Length: 412
Image 1 (tube, helix red, strand yellow):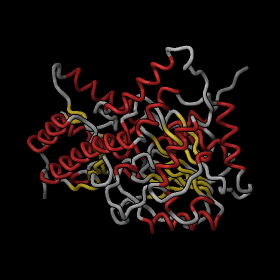
Image 2: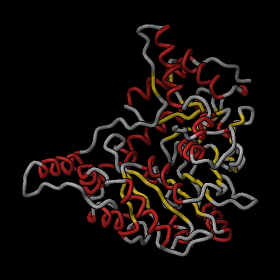
Image 3: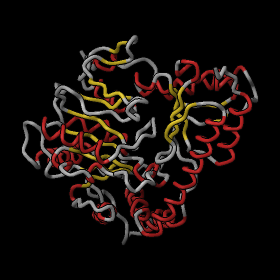
């Protein structure tokens, strides 16, 4: 008799983005012909630049000829791409060996799969609010108790709350934990950790033999040179941190699918020696993964060329101008707004103490604007919404104008 993994039953009902889609459909069914302005899910919208398309096309053409056809590649990633990634970090003043990079089909899968390296009895600390995959992957792996609807939390997790008071980036936990999930620039708040804030976590992890799982998927959106773009800019991080990154928001690869994870050889856990976790992740990848698409990897190599970087960064500036329009427009509408300066997300406080879904519904019904309720990212996200800067400029401007013209609430 087959028995299911009962941990799936612990997952809180309704994944965030399908619930948003359900409410949007309900509204449109009741208002046929209505046009909705989408400022919700963080999906890129602008076309790939020419130099990256050329890299993709060249690889496709080579696959069409017998003398240049390639099948399976290295599970760890094509060597030229890993060397280019090492050079990319070198330009940031960070030395990472090419064989410490593991190329994947995106950061989300790696963020879920990386916890398989660690025993189910590890105590997990989660930056709150957080991208749901960090939480849900650990729930289904058996590291938590049941979900408490009243608290909006799972038993067994240590939640590191990002609040207005701490600039939406938490301090290290007071007690001992084993795994720590951090994301900077943060999704959903848009907050970016300073060197000092990350150093505090690195010091904590080294002192407690904990491991930091650091999501840097939005690092290219940091324009302030005083802010770190990688955990490995912090002294000591190679001994205690894994970094996950992606071409998705960096270069518009949300559908192309390409990312990477860095597992340093110096990394160790409480019961392991340096090098063992690196070897374990290598074994995991060669056993369960046949490598990222060779076409996508050719595109990634094109992204990291001088021309590809320039063109990708120009699109990032386009999205950041969208973020400025959103931030200033919502401020002019009387809302309290954070983020949107070094990240493509604007974090908006709900008016009059409304909960996140109430304000979501108000924006949908009054302004025909779809956002993302902050509570969907964790209990510390309650009373906030996330607004995404990904979108065509005219759509962004129309959405902001609709909010300015139609949102009605008491400003007292």
